[in-house]
Length: 286
Length: 286
Image (cartoon, rainbow over all chains, first blue to last red; front, side, top):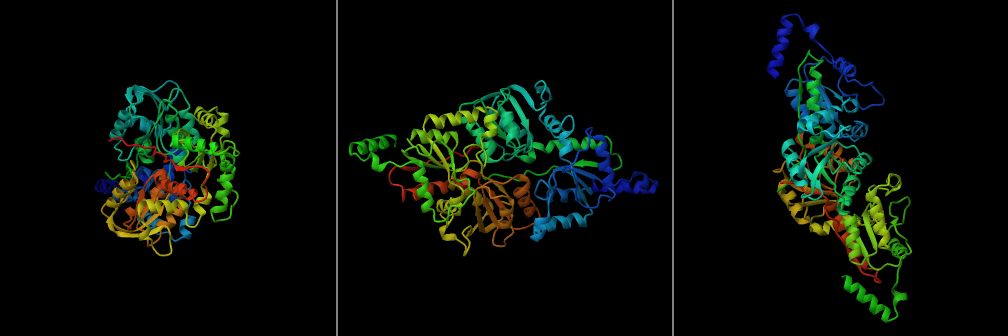
């Protein structure tokens, strides 16, 4: 990929098209704002997190989370603009002030890497979810092949052929390549009515989903153990026909940023766009 | 146990000691406040969560989390006062107003069960941690057999015989009987310097622990994936000698409430005191 980018730049320079084909990070984001189909609303976390927005872009990498590993792989692929769904600096607001005050070495190395490689990091969270339909959800539904199971009038609900919680969990684990998927509920419970809530929507959203009669299993990203998890465990102990399948935050939204790369290619033609999968952080001992 | 309780009550009544041996939930808590060894400080979450504090206590159950399942087992054991470390009603403040407004069925069934069984639930969180030494930590260290590995001057740090992250994780999983323990880091990394942070202390506390040169592996309860987990994954990707071993919230504090039951027996003699283990909510498909 690196060779291809370099070759295309050389060709471009030879043909005198450098000017015409150059685009800055800021211009990429302006084009996203024009194409996302919903008004840009403030306040938003969809802002530049690192780097100079006026940097000419060589290649765009979309990712679920701009971890150090993802930044390394983006740089190795010649991509200097990273569009990340989740935070870069360990908090929803990417606030580095406290960490910087502590002379935090993990932060410093990440910032140094970004600087040395002239990278720009921009977050695409709120408006990618606000898009109609939700960009993350669209990518996840496609990855699952669940378009054909949509329940009427609700983009997050599905009616799948009858299976059990255990079989569905094993299928999801295999389909999405998850090492540490976890389940709350009876593995032998039969299910057809599924809700898909990627990421971390929080307890109110999760419980409103679980309260519905047309939801038996909630497929979710992550939740705190004394909120959604205790609630789910109690629902099961009370004999309700409910289960939680917890994918983990990254696997639950990952495919939505793969879809984002393909979506960007529809209106960004000056530079390559590629998806770089963030690794699931966890493994489990036998 | 049920038979024993009933028998002792009968004996007591026969001997005319019912009056002498009776104690209310409120009196139990007053005695805890007198014995915990630190001043009672407000605001605190250590308050009654359900039931009438003036209920005469038949038996006390301590638990890590007053799930519906734990309440059922406490009632079956004849215990009507449940002392829980973590919330009963799905949030740190046990605020039921929103759930009640939604006519939430899971909440209603739990409240109904508590009422029908004349149970009282009281939370023992802040002051059990504030105790010197921390009551949860003391129970966990005892469960791990790590008293002999204490680092000097810090109750949460240990120097264990050299092992690998993979071996340590497998040992912890087996020792604490955890189904879904997860790890961030290199399984082959050698470790001796361990920090133990049960529960959910939050990202600042977790990162301050990981910043220390005398911490290689952080054994923790739970953390959000774009906070402590991303930070830990980045530390590993940057080549630092760090790892996270994530026990899950319940297994990470459970033994601290087993210890609490034994501690209570030192100054509550009127009624039986027993520990009821909260079940790990998760399982994983193969």
